[in-house]
Length: 214
Image (cartoon, rainbow, N blue to C red; front, side):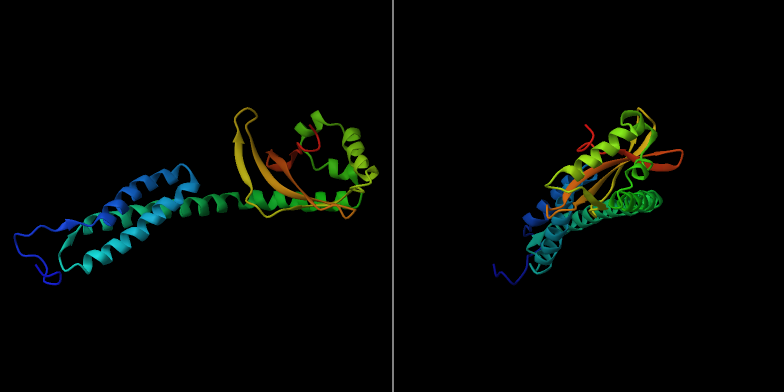
């Protein structure tokens, strides 16, 4: 039979393999709702489905499986849409908190840069102050100044990575982990240090700097 003639009424049309692969991939892509890194699966499924539909359309009736390709696109796009929508929703919900956290980092940067360590200490939470006294905090900062390698901390800034928010079931506080960059007064390269924040009574504060206060 000619490859361009198409199929007769009694001929069998083989199901396009790529369409089936795309459909299965879109189902597996639902796992991306549990782990963001798996978002590549539904994206790849949609790409494969588009290619499969083109192959089917160009087969002159010798290939079937259009339904599998369409379902793969619907499921794949749906999963990606849910992921994107949820991220946008979370971002909007957390925007006021992020503004407060970044404001504290900016103030902490000014206090530390100006060697106002007592003022920087006041930006911490009651939980932090219950673990670390103001004297211990100031002494730690002075130790950095006495260190010939660092010469002291010149400032602290946000490193731009997404802020991770979560609710602490034990304390009922909303917490956030923020990636920061500690700059030194010498030529020592800046150091990336995670800082924990906590919100209590609607007010955010620095809750922990594990790398400095173990």
